[in-house]
Length: 269
Image 1: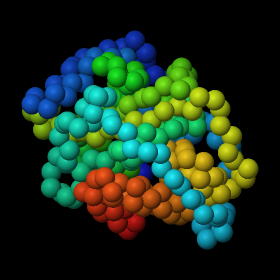
Image 2: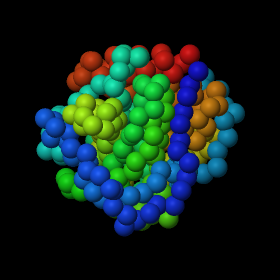
Image 3: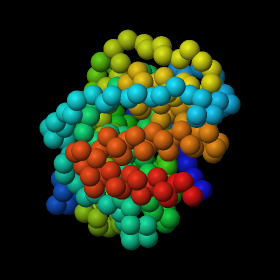
Image 4: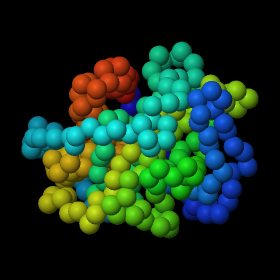
């Protein structure tokens, strides 16, 4: 059974500083003090009201063509850090649900980002959002992990992200607060579209998802499926998108592609 977790929506407390700094010894990972914001619901705020009545077989082919690979080694930590899990309960790692080798574009300046937590045990988890190569995060959100898919949306009362800018996001699972070197991490990046993008010509979410993917907005398509986290059609569309992601990763990171497929099998049943 698919388990999707979206933390309760709360107003961001801008200007508050995290009380502690976690330094991942030996991997160069630092969670620096920054403004603190709380996670909100997993929805694209700019998307129209949608329904979930169309079967997947009736929707048009997605025809997604990913952008060319980019070198992200200079963006701070994408090739370093510990990748994996806190225990051997599932054998799956912490996974940012996003392409690791291409720079995706968001059609909205108030994005929803999602990741997969393999652990049944609850751990402290940190979500971070950075602008460009900045060392200090724009958002540094502390929460408690829950198994399955978790997500975070830029709060409605926070400033929109800057169009045309590249952003990095990171999730860190704190396996042992006393041994920060054991923390696990995954991250990805995206660009906010330079101008508002209108792709929806239907209020049916299945069609809207395919339109987003065909237009090259993979992140937005995934976020649409998160607006119906436990519905059968939303789940089926989400798994299809993740299968596409695994296929995208195959040529550059076969191990990650296999982890994604194993995660899909876990979420399917």
